[in-house]
Image 1 (cartoon, helix red, strand yellow):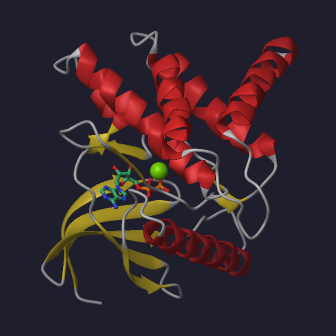
Image 2 (cartoon, rainbow, N blue to C red; image 1 turned 120 degrees about the vertical axis):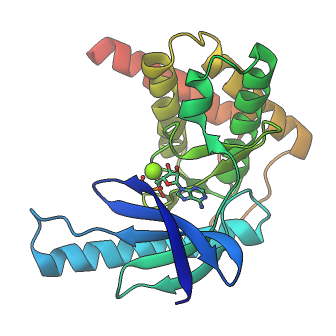
Length: 227
Ligand SMILES: Nc1ncnc2c1ncn2[C@@H]1O[C@H](COP(=O)(O)OP(=O)(O)O)[C@@H](O)[C@H]1O
Ligand SMILES: [Mg+2]
C-alpha cells in the first residue's frame, strides 16, 4: 500500500484515521484498532467482519451513485482501508460554528435528509447516524461515511431507528438549531418526491419515506413513554 500519511484526523475506540495521499490523490487511511477487553481471536474476527461489511456496502453505494467515499484499497488482515478523502467538515462542527448563515445550515440539513433517503432507498440503514458521520462541503452538500454498522434491511423498524438516532443527537447536542430535525425530515421527504416511489429491489420493496417517517413518530412516542 502506497499510502503517504500526513496528519492524524481521528483516534477513536474503534479506528484510527489518517489523512494523506494515495497514488497522488487525497485519501484517508482507516485502521481498525484492537479492543483490549476482547479476546484477540474474537476481536480479529469481529473487526474483520465489520470491515468487510463496510467495504462491501461502500462499493454498492458508490456504484449506485451515492455521495460516499470510494474504496481504493483494502487489507482486511491488517484491518486497513484506503478511502477517497471527502472534502468538507463533519456536520457536528458546522452546527457549532456560528459563522455559518441560517440558510447555509438549512441547506446542509435538507441535503443531509436527502442523502439519508437515498441510502434508505438502497435498502441500507446506516446504524450510526451521528453528526460526526455526515460531512458537509462548502456548497452545503452532504456525504455519508462510516458504514461499519450499516446493514441491508427491508423492515421499517431499523429505518425509523436510523432517523431517531440523528433526531436525538440534533435535539441533545445542537439545541441552538431548534428546527434542525424538521429541516432534515423535509429533505428526506422531498428526495422521495423528486425520485418517485422506490424501485423494487432483489430483496423486495423498501419502506417508503412516508412509512419511515410514521415509524419515527412511533419510536419517538415509545421512547417518551418508556423514558
Ligand atoms: N473518507 C473520509 N473523508 C474525510 N474524512 C473522513 C473520511 N473518513 C473518515 N473521516 C474523518 O475521520 C473521522 C472518523 O472516521 P469514521 O469512519 O467515522 O471512524 P469511527 O468508526 O472511528 O467513527 C470522521 O468523523 C471524519 O472526520
Ligand atoms: Mg464515525
